[in-house]
Amino acid sequence: MTQIRIRHLVIFPGARGASLRYFWQPSSKLRALGWRPMRVPADWAHITDPALLEAAAIAAAQDLNAKVDASREALVDAAALASVRPPPPLSARTLHELIVDYKASRGWRDLMPKSQRGYNQCLARLEAWGGDVPVRVITAARVQTLIENLRATPAVANAVARVLRLLLEHARRGGWITINPALRPNLSGTAPTGLIWPRGAVDVFVAAADRLGRHSIGTAVLLNEWLGQREGDILRMPRQAFRNGSLVLNQSKTGAGVVLPIHLVDRLIGRYQQEEARQQSRVGLGAPLPFTVVVNETTGLPYKEDNFRHLFAEVRAVAALDAPHGFEVDHLMPGRSASDPHAFVVRMEQLTFMSLRHTAVTRLAEAGAENSLIATVTGHSQATVQSIIERYMVRTAKMAALAFGKRVDAESTTQARGKPATENIA
Image 1: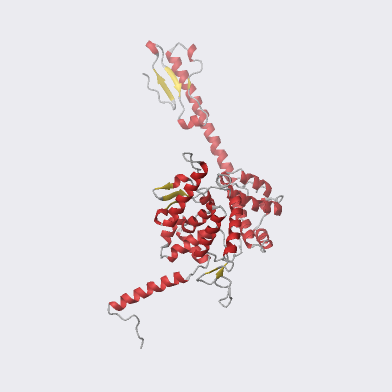
Image 2: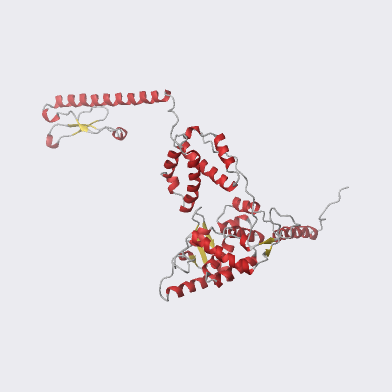
């Protein structure tokens, strides 16, 4: 076979002694750019002389290679030209258009429905603030003015600022702006509540729930005072999460997996079994139980969060009548003076379901559990566990006694070894 070395020219023998066949076959990179293999020359079927066919094939391949080279040079020239062009002007699109674009993004679609509702409230405020304003003219000064105008409600100001930061970061990544002016807003500090559920309050609330026929709400409170989960995760907890005496689930917000061994607490496992028996009684023997652990007694369906909060408040109001003087606690409430006669009292109407999450953290800390162990229960990061203890100003007498006990043990050990606990300095 003739040895010819032309780029991309491939030669195949003809069938049964027929003339050689010539093909121009570009590389995979060239094919990705649109070049396609072809038999050359284009009129090969009309050329019977082998020498003329070979010469025509070589000429056709060289012509195609020249076109490829010219195309490559054009691409290089275009890239060089683009590198010296000024950057495109900043977008003149408005904040309203940015909100629409953000809601069409994957980042928005990945948010839980509850988070979307909260974000929507903030986005509505931002729309009213500057929906027709071009994104490129929003400055850090304008952002700070917005926050200052919302200072009367610090929690709202902080929420709006955080959503604006996310929104403008979406704009920056999309090329609308080059710098996020809301990256470091001066947010307001919100006062720590310090509210954790006194142990007696849990008992009074559960009793009131049972008396009202809202056993499920009492079950949710009793479980969460130990488990420390988000309200939505408790309400959506599937029955199949119960495995070998433990509740095994993934938190909806963080995806953190937790194993909650309720079988180690007689009261919890007993309450869980009672709840299951009540549900079986409602649906009838042999009928399948509802999908979730906590079920609305009226509908037989999982609770919607708004409905749960409404019924929770009703039970709490009745429980408050059962404990009109509140509950004494062993720590000073934030913002109160020790001379205040109510400085060490928590009233039932002050307690929320959300506070149970922080109550669980506190009780575990009181028991001497390290932050890493607490995190395995609540699903928080260790840093968040520490911030909860600090943020909610929970420095209970039991925690102080635990600290003193560790020091007493350490100094007793030192003295037992024959070393003085303290040294006199001359």
